[in-house]
Length: 552
Image 1 (cartoon, rainbow, N blue to C red):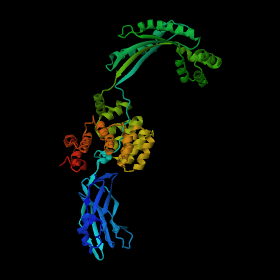
Image 2 (tube, rainbow, N blue to C red; image 1 turned 120 degrees about the vertical axis):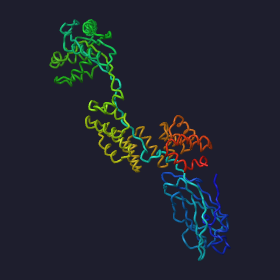
Image 3 (cartoon, rainbow, N blue to C red; image 1 turned 90 degrees about the horizontal axis):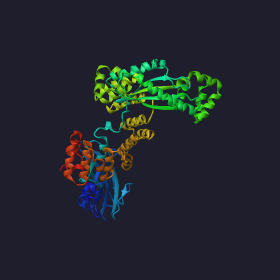
Image 4 (cartoon, rainbow, N blue to C red; image 1 turned 90 degrees about the vertical axis):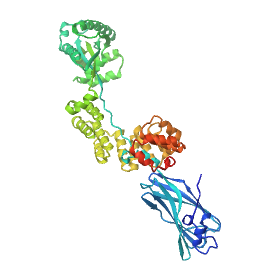
């Protein structure tokens, strides 16, 4: 519903009624001119304040020889923004201004201002000068509209340097690490008998020592044991299946001798049969000439008989296989499955202070994520970069600088990241966004193409006034910026839904705006008390036109 203002002199944009003898009469007769403003409450969109002022002149009002100069002025705390005058002329004036006929007219003119701090509480007024013959009359100033709504600026959360989001790259640190300890015995061709010498081999001695170490290591827990038997893939599938089964039985008996006197659980026993997987692994690691040909045969044929036949046809190669590969596959493996309890967060923090050199790449990355000390965080990331050439640490170093608002160091760090992946593209987009280069930011977000970049594009859309597009980009992402996009598109129910479980000051302030728009002053006041936990919002609320009724 439009609010009409009667123009008194300067807002009148009019010059005397036909028959008036002087410009002074314009002020006296100006009440018959009507003025409206769209929007009634001015709004800042993408750092701009735009509105349309409509003036209706009644018949026989504008003198045919008069000129009217109207200057729109946005008055705010700390200053005023002044537009160039808009000029009108009567029908008999020989100039190039817009003509207002004596029959009357309705004229709409746009007004435009660049946003400046302090415009949160402002008003638009029109200042006019009427010229008739040799006289100029300064007309009384008239207020046209209030302003300015800056709700979209909540996307910054009170900090222009925090606009846009870049997440740290995750570490692969494991609180519990799965480990195994192994030993093995070898069998003679076509035999399932365990030679006594195999039970005394270095492999078995190492396995027995590992079992003792597991028992005495407070960080290690034995979770299970296995015996797995195999046959080399020569001699036919049926024969090798039986041979592998027999070996599993003899290995199971040998197990009891190996672990005698040790507190070890009974193993699960299994038989693999022909060990094609082990065969491929050993060939890949061997120095056998034409090994690539063997591997190609394995990839071309899945039938064990065909594989064996094709390999045996390569007589010289098969001779090498018989001496260097196949004997290693006539075996049984003894396996201890172990869970290793890694350093706790408290232990990591202490190691950072006492002996950070013992930390591997993943531990350094995790330790950096645990500290709120920016200097220490940077030190740990630099350590991981210098010691392990860690690309993730290099990226996270950039994120740390970005979070501190040091765009120069952040850019330098990101430029050193070797993997130019979506994370890096998104980070460079946020850098551009914080520098005010929106076009470059949008280009980087498009290249990144992931969910975080889509979120940041939604933030950019809000900053540029593309609220409908922002609501689409941010839909389903959750958080205060999705809710803000819905508020800006007047989808208050959706905004409320997004903020249901949001208990932070940012969310509380948006809830206050929603309540105020719905006319629920009590709820708005209640939410504001929560928002005031962040001083920024207590300061903002004083001048927020959205909360004018709450602040009465």
